[in-house]
Image (cartoon, rainbow over all chains, first blue to last red; front, side, top):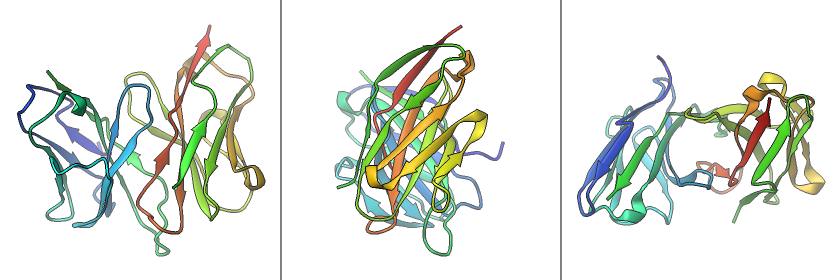
Length: 117
Length: 115
């Protein structure tokens, strides 16, 4: 499978615990994105990387959230001290970047569904 | 700030009916426009996209969308829907100026097709 892979698919955690999700993008894609999707809503942008550089972070990304892409390949998203409001589907996507800097659509992974109890 | 509005939250059609899902965006500059589809239990998939040129773009599975710049719209159409089109459809916009890493999605329209 050469698509975007996310692990785990499901995560149930107790409030206050830390969780970490992993995303493996398509290998030749240098951009990687994290989104969050709650019921009845479209995906909401969290952050993105171009290679290993984190270029933008949404205001949704509180200081309890941190994302890394240390070698410009896979990425991790960590949520510290989870709250019930963090329950959502966390989506990862990747895309190539043209010479003009415009993206050509994202390829999404299947997501990690987080439930905080 | 950019935003995307999808007019219908839930659309119910019978097979062979025609489909049009509305999408409007707010951004005055050059935009890239997308429609994504999410079938039950599956991940988001790109249905079609518009960058430039012919404002009528054709995507997979018989879907098409028309970009009308004066109306800031990018409506999705299909002449005859099938039961297998039951899914949630998301319109999304990306601007060329400012943030180039931020694809903004609408809230989605759930399509239910009755056999």
